Image 1 (cartoon, protein in one colour):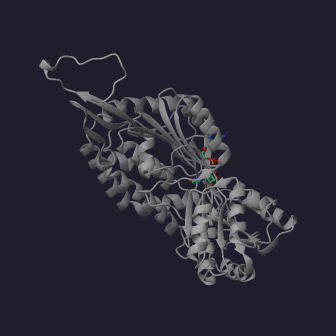
Image 2 (image 1 turned 135 degrees about the vertical axis):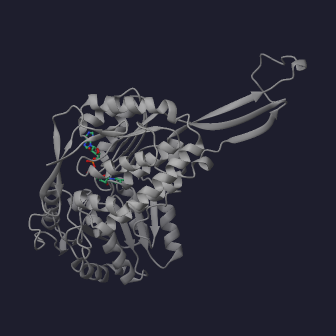
Image 3 (image 1 turned 90 degrees about the vertical axis):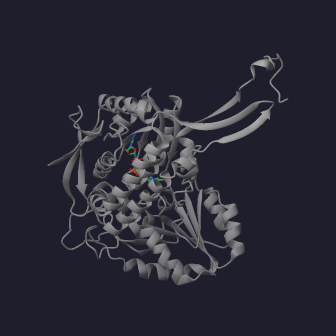
Amino acid sequence: MRTITHWIGGKPEPGTSTRTGPVWNPATGEQQGEVALATSADVSTAVAAAATAFETWSQSSLSTRTKVLFAFRELVNARTQDLAEIISDEHGKVVSDARGEVQRGLEVVEFACGIPTLLKGEYSDQVSGGVDVFSFRQPLGVCAGITPFNFPAMVPMWMHPVAIACGNTFVLKPSERDPSASMLVAELWAEAGLPDGVFNVVHGDKESVDALLDHPDVAAVSFVGSTPIARYIHERASANGKRVQALGGAKNHAVVLPDAPLDFAAEHLVAAAFGSAGERCMAVSAAVAVGGAADDLVAAVSEKARAVKVGPGRAPESEMGPVVTAAARDRIVGLIGSGADQGATLAVDGRGLTVPGYENGFFVGPTVIDNVGLDMDVYREEIFGPVLSVVRTDSVDEAIALINANPYGNGTAIFTSSGEAARRFQRGVNVGMIGINVPIPVPMAYYSFGGWKDSLFGDKHVHGPEGVSFYTRAKVITSRWPHVQQGSGASYHFPTAT
Ligand code: NAD
């Protein structure tokens, strides 16, 4: 069976652990490989390699870094299909969706190619007689990234291209469920000319994560994953004095007003709810139908949900693949059942779906649950599967209040033809990323990505300007070059401009 090892100091590294984790093929339900689960000693080896590499990489010129980033951009672009197939085989998502994920990651690399502009400092001439003040930003040191299974290429690329462009070195701990994409990415960095030790990958579970959180030579931790783990990462890494950004889970609402073009809204809701089998942190999992919109919306969404082509990720005709593991499938199926038990209406029931030739795959069909109450488990839990709950409200203000009462605040959307309602919505919701007739409002790489409330612990969003700020710290220099004849001019009161 194929074994996936770590990548440390510019080469594959088996590590010291005898523990491994299974890597499944979600379409067939078969185990296709095993991944080494790092010990804390393996993590120390990776951090030491990154700390040594930091000594020279942090001193490299902006021109050197930019050349490597451009080369990396070209290589990822050329190998997009290979990366997409690796992702599809381990995650389950369809190849076209995986290509989209690589493309969105590539946009962060392109953003990072502009690092000379992004790191330009400020300069104030003659703030006092003969005195100038200027600022610049410097890298932090070894940065760690801990990432989820659902975007095995894109989410790490929210982090490492920006961190490395800023002059840091990086240790990535990707999800142990789909670890192989990170290994190809490591090879591409090496091929692009990145010095050994600047980008490292350790695979593992809690043991390796805790080792990163506690290691004194790790300066900053970026995390993306579920809310309970995000909260834990933030608390433990902060207690150890590290800079932390920890992005958590989500419950994204899409509000549909009666004046929205119904077919357009239904089409987009279905794509946003069932694309990638709902395993997106920006997936729409709750539709909020306002006033008279509900009955027609549920009918249109249900018809389109039944038409989604479910199959293996590698089949070109598939629009939606399996979910990631048997455990994930069983949890989703259980939650759908709880909806029925607690009084909701199963408009479309995706339980029990079998795909011919893939009877052992981890498939759940698109599911639409109507008349969902706010106290039901299907509404309260982040299902992270192909399940759309429909909640009915009477007004936009009620919809806004409902969204604001939810503990998550990652993304949300409104479908309407009223500018007034859209503006009220965008100003009123306590959510980080908002779509107006756009169901999945993932910001472009030159903006920053992040939620509010329990969807983010820490102060900085990822990539864009906040990413550069997270991976650097500022120095402000107050400078004077006196003529010898001027005398010292020193005084004992607090320095003021003259
Ligand atoms: P997860 O929280 O289970 O795992 C994320 C990472 O944490 C993995 O690398 C995993 O190995 C590690 N981990 C898991 N349990 C741990 C523990 N007890 N101690 C230390 N480390 C641990 O998340 P997942 O299931 O891989 O991904 C799905 C979740 O990620 C969903 O909740 C989704 O909303 C969220 N997500 C959020 C965003 C965002 O931008 N906010 C983006 C993608 C995914």
